[in-house]
Image (cartoon, rainbow, N blue to C red; front, side):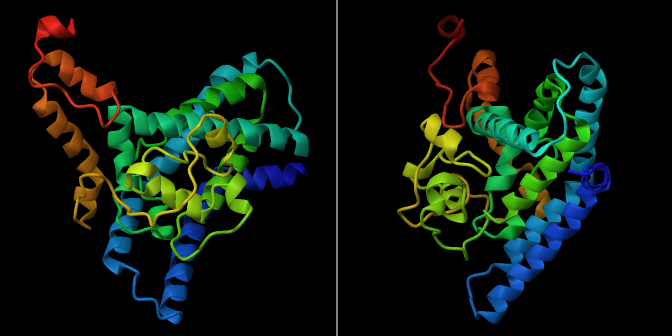
Length: 290
């Protein structure tokens, strides 16, 4: 790969390009629904999702650049290897980035405070391209921080940014109800069918299919499930609103209600790190939780 290509697609302006492409794809998808005379596209839900995107996109872009860049400045001088920018190094970095995504995504579902961040992305009762970038400003923090490991190994910053943006672009297409099953492709990749499972609240679909592009880590760690039953989207306690402000902070309202149900300080703290389905016991006292 040429140095000029790396500088263009790994530059600080590349995230803005992805931002423009995202909105273009949302428009194309909406046009498809219109031309195909589909009546099941919820315009208000899509506008709510896009409003959330506009609410935090520029801060998220800044964090996506600033945090990894700071980590690279601190850690790259102490790198273990000098990894050249080649196709094979992109392949290794891709597998590493997929593992980082899987780990941080699973953390976002299994830890109370991180679920409060990630709740925004899952609260839509629709599944289309507009949902892809619907998220809280700090939702990707754990994934971004894990980039420090990439710096220590010796991958260049431009290569890291270029790959992350490419994977984020590809991830848009998994957020679709219009794209049906894709045969053998569904077995190894996070296709729209597999990601619909992840966004569903059907009991058998909860906490499944954490992968971003590949399904191999889900299969390796036992979290893969194929789409069989028609998925129902949203969160267990549906927020029933398209107001971007209410969407944005619904996860924290959920967490506050849960902490309010706790009868002691220890259980209130547990709400922050225990899985979302964990409930504080009203009978528990301090001597039992010590």
